[in-house]
Image 1 (tube, one colour):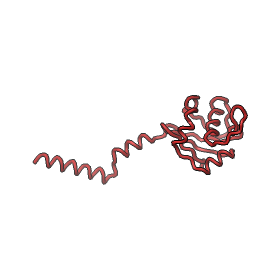
Image 2 (cartoon, one colour):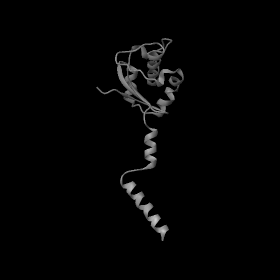
Image 3 (cartoon, one colour):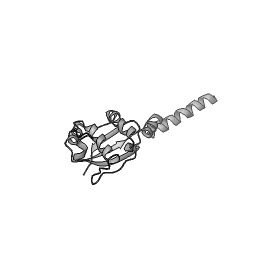
Amino acid sequence: MKRRVLVGLIAVCALVLAAAGFDAAEAKDKKKKKPIETYFTLIGPEDLYNSSGVRLTDAVQIVRQDRANVHRYGIRHEGDEMDSFFSSLENRNKLPAMAAKGKMRSDTARLIRQGDIYIVVTIYKDRIDIEIAAG
């Protein structure tokens, strides 16, 4: 008898939590997906070329060069924000793999390749999302 009551109470609790929209796996997943950092930057003319002067054609490599320019070479454009994550060469080297796991629309990539565009980069533990800045 006590076992039936206990099972019944557990079932009622589960129903209440489900009705309230609580999902333990979803809550854990949301916590994992919390951004580490977000920054806003202008992709300027210097960002379109690597340190050897070769024109970059890949949007992700351009974003990586932007961070190298900011952190290593001290080249900042008006409106560029600093970030702490890509201040290290080790993390800048991770940027392409993180971008491959993240989100970037094809029109965003095209505009980055052209330059003179403000973007927002959201950094997560294992990926980055890159989008055109609103405004």
